[in-house]
Image 1: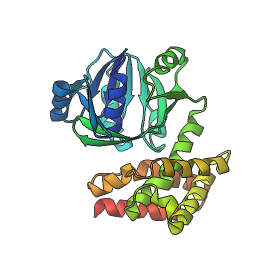
Image 2: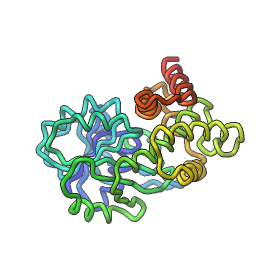
Image 3: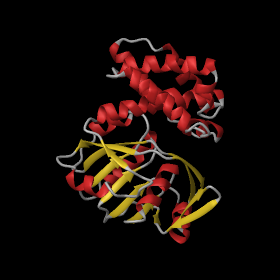
Image 4: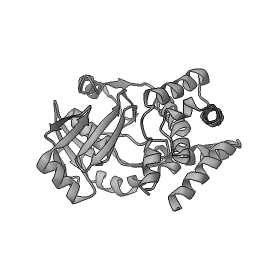
Length: 293
């Protein structure tokens, strides 16, 4: 297949690298300098002191001719991407944003594209414009958001790479809600406390506050099995114990965070249902203040 990956961040590089083993891959970046670096030298995986390079094309504009697109930009960057996607002929597009603030955007997007959503459970850190580290291995969960049939795509994504499995989910809402709770519990707390993920389960005070955040988020999202969802949060903390969360990385590098996509979405849902969410409100306000500071 001809694969396009929109976004040259850590997740974009991660997807492009693993798909390059079996498919023709192009990374579409915002900056021309990054596109040229990828075009000239490929994508480099740095892992355990070793380096591996994959041949991948790089472009600074979307263009055409793709069979499948992965959109790996942040939610607040979608407004710049969707108009370009509207120019393309109908194709399969998988959106990989954290949180769920992109869902109302997709619901209101009038397009003939076949739309899917994904939840990335891998950890990745971008080193430079063409290099990344794969810091935590998991799976990519995905589901149909607006598509008549996913049979062909299921076959294609079943054998991407042994280190990069895809898991089909019938219910996109429960899939994204489960990932959203993990993001809400881990990302803002690590960004506020300036700690790595594992510290949240090691320090009793941090763990207690994380549980309060979890209880608010699970009530807002009406999670079917809170006990299992909480165990999943703890498991992710442990598996990614030495990782720096994306939100902490954004705060440290003075970039806009995904606070609106994660806590902002939950607070909007809480307001619609008349629920109080003091802990999520505190985290949201704290991260937005950190962005401005």
